[in-house]
Length: 423
Ligand SMILES: [Zn+2]
Image 1: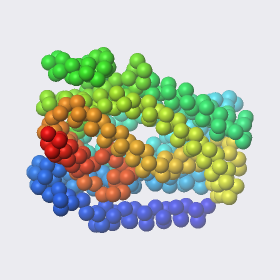
Image 2: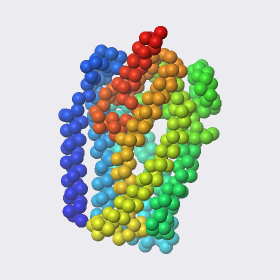
Image 3: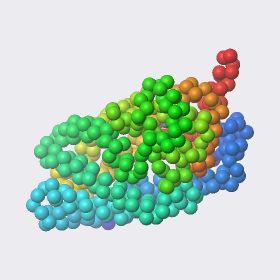
Image 4: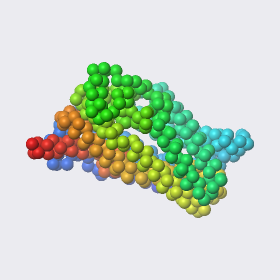
């Protein structure tokens, strides 16, 4: 047991050192020679100070990301190896006879412990964003969001874990398949209620406030056959200076949401380009593809988790204080494996997402035909979020669901050149 913890902590620290070396010393994020001086070169649209800040801020943010993911794995291993998970289960069985309540009690202690140990990293990320003027939330506001997060996750986890362990106990061999079948309506339901139930817990949503702009946006939406009542504005300026817009929800709840920061900081033509990009997602039904993708990945994931969990319990069950997969105290192992699998497929998921984002960019430029506005909106996006125009390779494959700003502007440049030669 000691050995397992020592090894895990040791490997984690070596990994941390490697990541620091990679992000701060190894990578070269300067612009490739052929794009120097073009509109994709941040030196042409950022001040030297903005350029320096965006480099610093991105480096730190990326480091925090790469520290946080395996930190969760380490935490789960330690929770198991120290017998804490077993302790929580004993407390739960001592509290009540009802299995549902036992799950609630066990899950409460586990969630509380994980939250307490991950809060410092979350706080660092908040402080960093605040330091660089990206996050504008007060501490109490930030903490409120963390508390909402805790309870939303707790309720969702309670439902999922109760059903999951009931299935594991009832169908030792096929539980993963039945869990997958049940996950389909659950995923669809979550996608359905997300914009109307979950998102409003964090922010205020309302119809566009600028009526003149709304008329122009709705005209654009009409061209793409998007019903007017599906466009919303969200009050984000009290939390962040970054810009964003997105498509969410399915069926009657599907909507395009524009952050108020985007509406405030971008010019009208730029907003219309961003809007056209979101309409591209809407028209190409990317949300539905996303839901289908989740359903497929869940099947593969649950199958793999079943195999891996049983194998690991057989091999390291004593060290991890787990006798049987049916015991609730095997849950941290379940979370560990899900998180590991999630991380390992994330380059693939991100690649699919980048492909969709590129398609939406193409849709938007074909609809609006204003390359200048499109390019300046990306430049403003980089400035407002202090994002790297040309991020390191590992950062791109693990973190970027969008093409890099460099790739997006280069695409627009070549698109315009092609159009000119076509004439
Ligand atoms: Zn997009």
